[in-house]
Image 1 (spheres, each protein chain N blue to C red):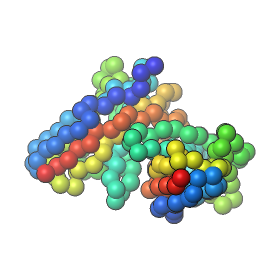
Image 2 (cartoon, one colour):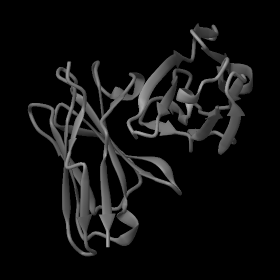
Image 3 (cartoon, rainbow over the protein chains, first blue to last red):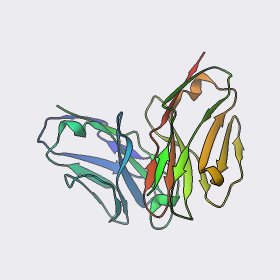
Length: 116
Length: 112
C-alpha cells in the first residue's frame, strides 16, 4: 500500500498570501488529521476529518481551515499568512470507524512552509 | 484536561548503552490510548506502539520495551543496547475521547 502523500513538500510564501496544502491518505483510511510542527511548540493538532466531516478542531485561529473530499483526500488552507505560520505541516491518516483518536496514525512526510 | 509531559528534551548516549525515555500523562478519561512515535532525521513520524488504558502489561519488541504504570501515569520507553540508527526525536502521545495530544518530544542522540 502506498503511504500518506503530501504536496507540495516545500513552499515559500510572503505575509498576507494564502496557501493550500494537500494530503492523500492511505487507501481505505477515512480519517485524516493535520498537525503543525514547530521547534518551539512541538506537534500541535489542527483538525481531524472523517467522511468529509470535521470531527475535532485544535486551538488555531479561523485563518486555518480544511476540508475532506469524498475520496478521503484532504486539503488545508491558511489565509493571510503570518511569519509565525512557518512550520512543518503534517498530515496523518488512520483506519477504523469514527474518530481516529484511538488508532495509530500514519504520517506523511510533511509540507515545509516558509513565510517571508 | 489532557496533557503529556516529556521532561527530557535531549539525551545523548554512547552506542550500546541502554536509555529510557520518560513520558507522564494526565487525563480524566477512563478509556484512553498511549502511543510512541519516532521521528528520524528524514522527518516522517513512524508509529512504534499503542497501549490502551486497561492493559498494563509491559511490552518488549526486540531492543525496545515499554513500561506502562497507571499508578504513576507513566508510559516509559527503553531502548536496550542503543544504536546510531536509534537517533531520532521520540514522541509520546495520548488520545481519549477527542484528539491526540503529543508531548514535546525527546531528542535522542546515539554516538558511535
